[in-house]
Length: 88
Image (tube, rainbow, N blue to C red; front, side, top):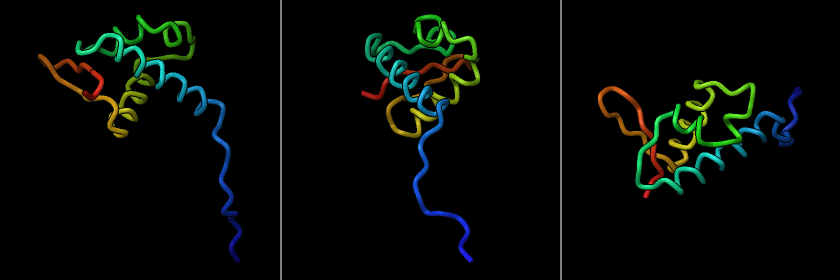
């Protein structure tokens, strides 16, 4: 009756690509610490993100949200604009 298999599935190509993007974001934030950066600044200054034709601000925001939930990045708001920095 149990039709679903319990086997672990391999990550999709997009998930693997996103892991590379998240590590690039973390590396960039280490380099600019302790400064806070906005999504547009992160997008412009990381070659992997700026060269990807499928990249959008929403996708970068989603990647940053994943990093926040993992405890690697902190979100700071100044004058109603979101900035992100690496957790110290």
